[in-house]
View 1 (tube, rainbow, N blue to C red):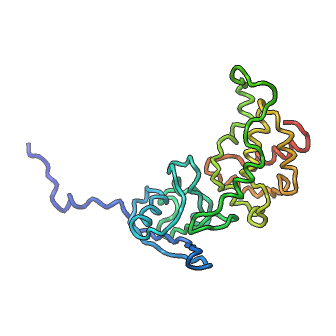
View 2: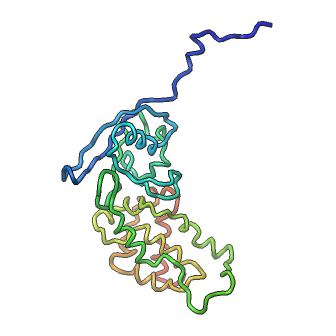
View 3: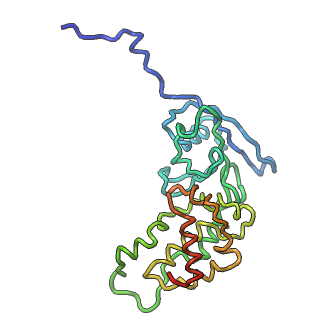
Length: 252
């Protein structure tokens, strides 16, 4: 039996997986100018790759001065949060094919925090709000001699808010935070929720009083921006409402 053979035309007809994509990036370098500018970069990339891969190609092959944060590249560290096509996302979790690569992909820093350079913002105000809500287990008495046990039902009470990776996507999507950087913001409230409703913790009242401040939980206007922006799927607005309810009823 004759062995089937592809002719050369058929053999070379395999289509390339790469497409040409334009990245439109908001650039800012305080050493050069006080104004930010938009700059376009055209690259060849597989649409199944991520926006982070595109930024790497630009930095490594076209312009080494492009500045952005990234670490794990797997949606765990939360360091590469940025605005992509007008929405807060993690660059490492956003596929090129999912954001209409036929049009320029706009990339800019998250809002509400001071831009240091290009896509890098000053995260200190964000982390200060996080520290202010005491995001750690507080108990009294002697050090336990065995593990503090907790029922599955008690653990489930705050399970959702343990998923926070401190990317600031929720906080920097909040209009209240944009207009007043003194607001604690959704991420800080989420992390307070995680301990307020922990049956092993004894500082729930203290955290509630911290969030009862004029820059605390009552500033929330329930726009759901934070929930939509969370890359971990946390029901942020629900957590904020539960903290408000706990402040009113003092039951948690």
